[in-house]
Length: 187
Ligand code: HEC
Ligand code: HEC
Image 1 (cartoon, rainbow, N blue to C red):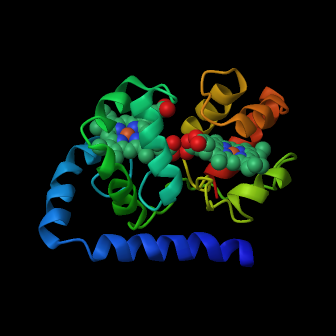
Image 2: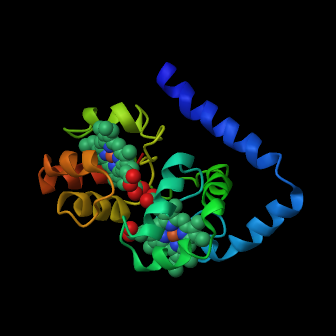
């Protein structure tokens, strides 16, 4: 319970900070963020399964990812380029802007099966409902393709921007990672 209160408080404070910014600054930022929608979706549904949902994703996590893409701590040619269309001081407002939007409804018709082995440990950070917390991202309803890519990238050292995640993913077998990614995508 106390654990869940932090992300909510954090989100509310971030929203207040964003809401009291001058309207013209907000409009300017919104205009600058339009190109993001070409991939992440005009309605929050990404154009393909390798592009993550960012509508309703957690704020601190997204701010860090934008920093990491710019500094190449997280490798992605596409996002290296697009994160650099923003100024350093615009990264957090951009993350706030997308995190305040509603996570799109899950397009997967299949209901999540029984919870696979190995997911208990994830909840300490990603929360019981896998909707994320400070500073962990939401995983529930993210695409299977995206989740398994990222889990494998942590496991084999291609994604290096979080040491805990590297260790945790290396402790799982490829089959376990696959089962967990399928489960999370269906939530
Ligand atoms: C040309 C397509 C494209 C555009 C435009 C684009 N992105 Fe991305 N974005 C991606 C892809 C693909 C990834 C996943 C990269 C990877 O595989 O690590 C990503 C990842 C992200 C992530 C990390 C999310 C997560 O769950 O790890 C954030 C945050 C993000 N983008 C924000 C933005 C913002 C803000 C903009 C606009 C300034 C933007 N993106 C523009 C394709 C795009
Ligand atoms: C100690 C806390 C912690 C635990 C436990 C943990 N995670 Fe994470 N996870 C994080 C954080 C923090 C990030 C963001 C890392 C970064 O800065 O890129 C993350 C990122 C991820 C991502 C990338 C998501 C994205 O949108 O880019 C996936 C997938 C993921 N975790 C899956 C899992 C799974 C599955 C488990 C359980 C087997 C797990 N995590 C356990 C803290 C944790």
